[in-house]
Length: 114
Image (cartoon, rainbow, N blue to C red; front, side):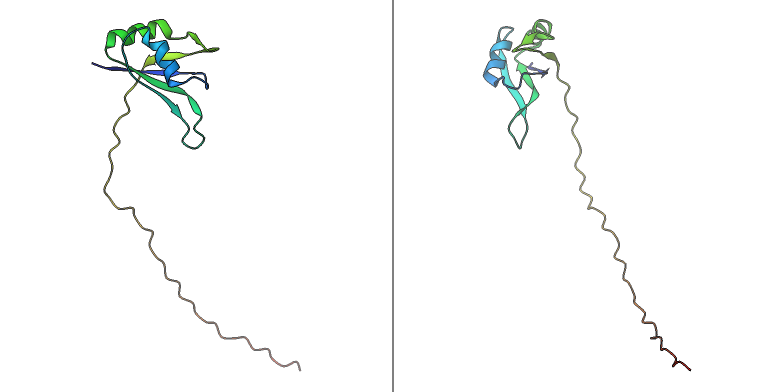
């Protein structure tokens, strides 16, 4: 069964191919994903590496956690699966419309000066 690892503190200049080469020493890498900012495209400094089996993933954690890669000590640990967030089908409550009633006040008339 495939095992996904979280890789943190990545050098911003590292490519997915370079990351795959580093991890491939420990076994068959299924996928590599470096997370990037959706607006700038710049790396956020973390990513995920998926191994074909758990044994290779465990060897990679042991061998690469806190190792220096391109001048930075990377963190490698088992990725935690994100829980599914249920989508609600309830409509968003609308705020009630309050009608303002305007009452006209009688105009004040000035009394003539005596």
